[in-house]
Amino acid sequence: MLPSDAIERTTAIARELGLSNDAAQRMLVHADSELAAHNAAIQAAHQKQVDEWKAQVLADNTLGRTPETRKAAIDKGIAVVNKYTEAHPKDGDAFKGFLNETGLGNNPTVVRFFAWLGKSAGEAPLVQSGGEAPKQPKRTADVLYGNPPKKGSDAA
Image (cartoon, rainbow, N blue to C red; front, side):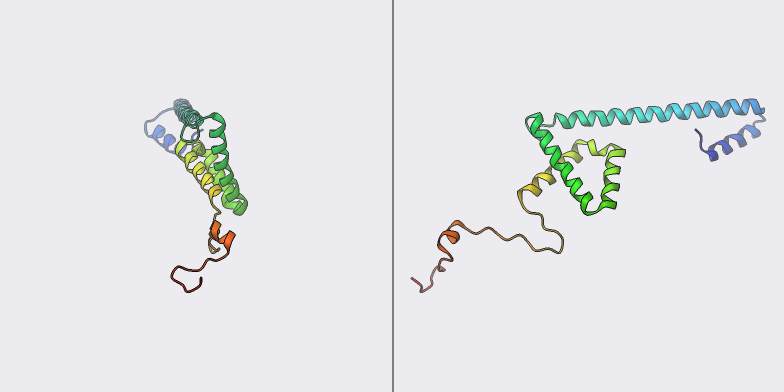
């Protein structure tokens, strides 16, 4: 449906051209149907792009060599978004809505980014801002023998 301001502008042009009410109405109906067809074509093209992205992601060997490993990588990325949503419900829900409504959550680059974040988060503990850095694991020698003397010390 044409917005009211577009109808007003079209009506003004119809008056300026001296069109009858019937002719002006036909012009508005035609413009409205053209706009609807144009919007449908844009939506179809967008959906086609999103579907292509989905297919690319499911076949993306950088996410894994098998469908199962790719699914696991995608799931790690989804877990990152869900974790953010848990910590920041308002922003997280808006972010998830943005990814879903625009289709960008299916973009291969976006999916690879979140999969990478998920993998990285699983490899090392994340440090929250203002938090302490994770402690370095002890060396095997320190665990077995305690703190060995430093080189060059007099302790024997």
